[in-house]
Amino acid sequence: MREFKGGAFNVLVATKAAEEGLDVADRDLVVFYEATASVIQFVQRQGRAGRRRDGEVAILLANSTADAVHAAVLDAKLARLPGIYYNVRRLKLGACKQNLGLAIRVRPGALFHKELVRELAVRGFDAVLDGSIASDVALPGGIGVRIITTADAECWDAEITAEELPGVERPVIAIWLQEEEINNLIDEIKHRHAGQDISVLSFADAVTLSIEIAEVLNKKYN
Image (tube, rainbow, N blue to C red; front, side, top):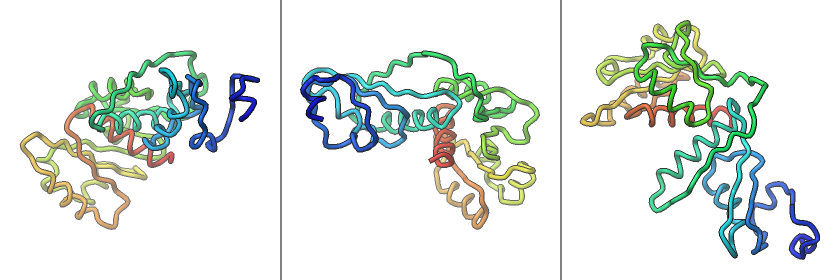
């Protein structure tokens, strides 16, 4: 650290131990080797730069990997925080040649299928239309999402889930809540699926649905 502060070399490579407590005031660039979904960790990491003058943070990530999931979740969390401003520039330095099996498949005809493919692509996911899947959205790890309306949800239970998502290891029910509707229906649907390995979530539009899907993947890969 003394040599780094003294200018003997201008790059320091470190583990997570460097996230807190290091004070090198004239450093203006921090590079994350991987993305994080934690706002606290993100703030701690970027706080190592820009103390004496404006600094920059670069995050290395590969599309169709858990990195993209973590980055999407972090974006969603930061967007919800009042008074937070951050200017993100996404630079494509090279294509990832290895497909790690994290492509998201969306069934044509599903609610918001076109908008969802677009929003997932914005967040760095490989999202494709696939009419052969049983669910509305097929995620890695055997996760299948059925997108339903609140009218469908009135009588939806675990038996219907099993019928609608045959062979899906980890079913997820995504309920589209219109503006005038209330959230107690979600609790009722969760109660009907009590004791089942079935997740229930709600969304307002394609943007929030893509964020919820990123959250589901983040839980799988964290």
